[in-house]
Image (cartoon, rainbow, N blue to C red; front, side, top):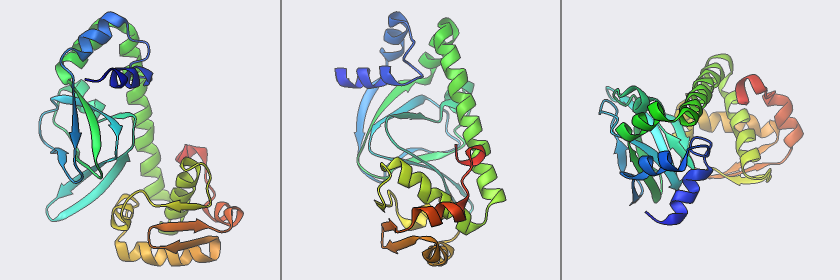
Length: 229
């Protein structure tokens, strides 16, 4: 694995306080792979053999039931995903696939659990990471249950606006049908909701979204730290 990847991992909160000996033990069985777009990395129900670290690209976390499918999250670098399954040694509850060409580091789950039991700083970091993930799930649930479709979309656009250095013109980082699934609506509802937001400072042209009046959009969305973080 290239040295720059070791350095990138070290910068993550999860690994930043690891003792050198513990980090070496964790990385001894790790390997680095590149994946093309639309490759399924994880199937829900499979055993959690690896902790995944995304270093470039984008990964969708999703789930299927019968003939239905829903997007649960989109992962951007540099970050880990599905840590809980690794730590509990239980089956994955989500599937994962690449949205674009992606580079991923895979660490054997048994090594993660072994270092967790030996290195107190690493154990503390994992507890904090899992706590943040839990709070993220609570925020997502509140967003879906307490807000209308237009409020969910408006607040999501504000999150993207902040993530993209507060540019008023932004490109959706995924397909509209995937965005609709993540926000708990159909593609048709998403289209109608974008139309509703036109009177609240939003213009949409394909995947390009222009926030023409940020103040009006914020007044409509009413973001809160208790949901949006």
